[in-house]
Each structure stands twice: as C-alpha cells, then as structure tokens.
Amino acid sequence: MKLYTKRGDDGETDLFGGQRVAKDQLRVEAYGSVDELNAALGLAIAACGGNEQTRVRGVLQGLQHRLFDLGADLATPPDAAGAGKVRRIVMEDVEPLEKQIDDLDAGLPALRAFILPGGTELAARLHVARTVARRAERRVVSLMQAEEVGEPIAKYLNRISDLLFVLARAANQAAGVEDVAWEKG
Image (cartoon, rainbow, N blue to C red; front, top):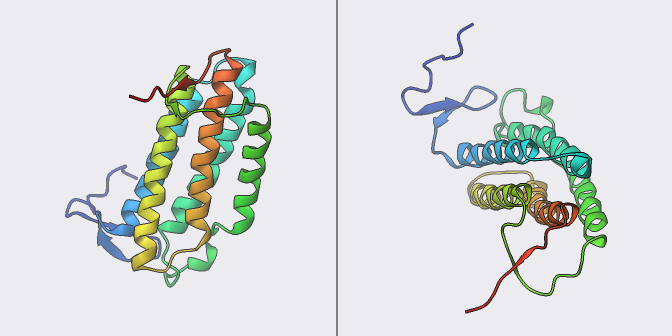
C-alpha cells in the first residue's frame, strides 16, 4: 500500500463515512487544529527531561491518545456511515482534566500577575501547545455554529488549554525557574 493516494490533489478530502469535502471546510479545519495540537504535545514530550518531568510526560502522553479520539469525533459527522463506532468526547472526559488542573495548581505559588510564555524550554513548548489548543477551540466553536458537534468538545479543549498553562508553570517550578511575570508598560 502506497502512502500517497492522490485523492486529495484536487483540494478535497474524505471524512469518516466517505463524504468528500473541501480541505478548508470548517470540520477539516477543526480536526486539523487538533492534529496540530497533538504534534505540539509531541514536541513538549521531547523536551521532558529527567525524573522531575515524569508526571508531565505521562499527562501529555495521555492527552495525545485522547486527542486522536477527539480528531476522529470531529472527522465523523453524526449522520455519517459508521458514526456509532467512533468514540465521542463526553462530559466524563472533562472531569479528569479538571482534577489534574486542581492537583497541579495546588502545588504552585499563587498567581499575582500575568505571566509570559517562557522560563524553561519545556514550559515554553507547553505555552505554544496551549495557544494551539485555544485555536483548535476557536475552530470548533466556528464549526458548532454551522453543524452539529458534541457540546463537550469545546469544553474539553478549553480545559486542555488550562491544563497546559498549569503544566508549564509546574515545569518551571520543577526546574527551579520562576515564571516570567509581565511588566506593564
């Protein structure tokens, strides 16, 4: 089997279920942004150092697997053939993210100012991933205004961006590096 099919050469792609759509269609933009987020998480994982980053690495690897589920969810319209076989993102997927955020945040100093993306390389990569998560969320919101999409998806992406923010702070703390505080004006 060849890696390339040439089916996308005309600017169209297949959704799960076989429907052909333009590659810039809202649904494709949404799951493409989720794919980009997954790649950004891979970069962050590559920057995880020794034992102090074992927890961060584990959280990110778990997120990568769920993002594949999310991509499949977005790539499969509810009325598509075989739609019932796709794992959908549900509210029960949001709750573990909230617990991870709360657990990590409890061990961090209170925020007294806005912080800039930076500190360690890992924290900077996590902030980049956070901004990609925010864009993916915006793409999903656009899609939700035009088509039926599971309600928990936008909430799930919103929590991922919050989790990446707190993971960036935790990465700095584990490395003994302070967050970079924003200096107004």
